[in-house]
Image (cartoon, rainbow over all chains, first blue to last red; front, top):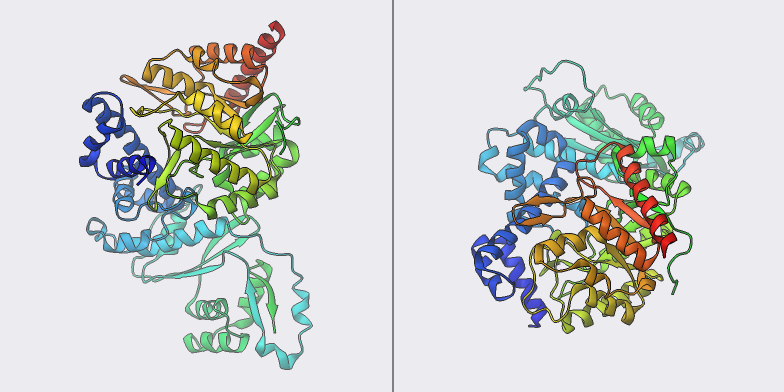
Length: 256
Length: 278
């Protein structure tokens, strides 16, 4: 091993495990006490970077659990799932699974689904801008071909299903929300995450609409997606859903 | 390879999200705006739109914090590819990285960690910078670091190391005056003597920032006003190197925009005065 690689490997081990700091005395100037205190600065930076990145992706969970507890979550998450990139945008992708397994959040069983929703919002924020598309081209499709239409959804569009009222929880924790804060805990939400222009929106989606959007996002034809929706609810209103999806620019193209 | 970009001069500030609206409404007279490259490794959305608006009104300085030029095992090719996409999209006036490592063995610490200043590290960094400059098809600037530990096995000073890197690769240097001061206090050396190791032509940008005092150690936090000794060292640097594009760096506890503009005006006044005296 090269000297530089040995140095960095020891440094990395000392950051991740405080007990290995004495091995840095071989490399670093000063007393053992000084090395210990200075390495602690880097260790704090490491946790702060994880905390900041997770706070940016999961602002609602941070409000729900409080800043101090969130900092502890960030430290624990980072211990098991350290960053693998100099770009922290992708850090926290598995926070939902961590929360589902972490014993100290077991009393908040909605947190993993809320994390999935916040991650979808985080992804949508930086997703590619939807291409300009003239919805009138859809009207030109021959009637006998319409069943075979496959919609293209705007980048960032995602569905997050939960047995908890995650859309309600998300909504009442948004900056500027000034309504009342009651939560009907027995309601199950399916969140539709989308981006209209530069604004990320989260809306509660009926089971039938969710079945349609879910199938269509996965590549189903209009006929198959509509069949999935009708199976969920025989009163599914395809016209209303498409009207909304087109006016809110959720759909940005189609193929035949 | 381009020499120092002639289109950028004067003082700039970091463009940070809480200031977007006010900057675009007021368009304050600034030499350039700086952003952290990694915050714009996105396909689209509001942040990219803001950067495009900024680019239309100001020269942009892309300041990287995550490429980790000094990782002993590998340079992250995907990270460099993303940086290249951003550089191609933004056509920045300046592109800079740090003389540091950030991760090894597949784990990243997302911090700017110090290197030993050895011949081995110099050869590695020179190769990496050659590769980055060839990939980006432009000169980059490499910045001196704030550090809290010093390697026993260093064979030269950080400034001598940087000067040699510039000589070998043609890269420019980003002299962070606050970082130099922080290290001078933390390790007990004369920062003015270190300036003497640098060549004026190699310096493409300077940084000014605040730090915090934690017991016997100064910590580079970019969350406060530039302190008096750092202003004095900046005066000395301007006398030696001439006026260089200078950034007021402020990343935590962001103040009102006017505080940054006032710091920028102070830096401008010093550069004008000191260069006029030379």
